[in-house]
Image 1 (cartoon, rainbow, N blue to C red):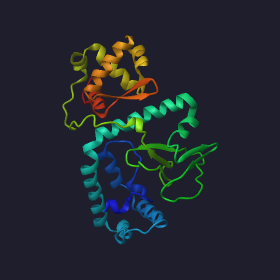
Image 2: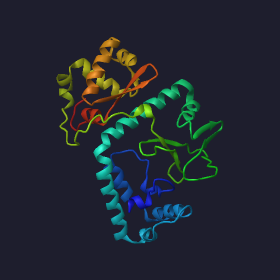
Image 3: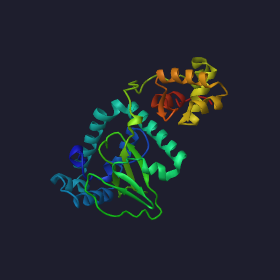
Image 4: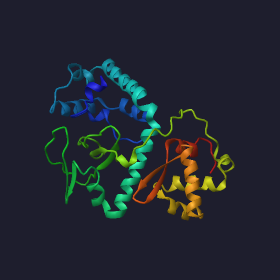
Length: 276
């Protein structure tokens, strides 16, 4: 049912493809709470562009069918998404690091111009896109802004969700520089040491390095050394060990190594009951 409503190309109902932050379980709960009127509105918009499955027209008024759809979404998420969640979050975090560097180097214009040069072009003051859906028109933001969302699935082309609230969402293919081999397949139930034991486990300097990366995502090795007040070779050594343990992810940007936490590293620092 889900794959019938979310085709590889074309329009998908916005209520099934939110750009909300959170764990898969948290986002799924918000999807289940979507008002019927919103579901009806989003399905009607998709129907303007291509036919919907016959059963989809009954969704807003059939509680059992809607529950079946959401159960289908849960199943797809469990089978296809959650087993790779650490890899996905690592890659998207790395992509965000690259985009931050673009913005620092040349402002938002430079960032937008490098989102997907083959299909996205910044022609001030207009952002021009060539999508695979065939959408042709003008979208006026009217002060709402535009949410940029890196996607590990949209490999061929960016896509635009004009119905998303509170602002339209531009999903763009994640940078090739941000992807890499599977880094960590640790279970969600991984025991996490309390913060009071962090320094004892890692050593005070390495614990300080991990904390600095958490507070300054995307920092370079040189910046990390300055933050922790150690030498650059020492910072590089500690980062290598943390990366080998699956706690951080490192992305190369030009001649700099930029460090960010992985999902495991975040859980490591934010386990319930830790003292600051």
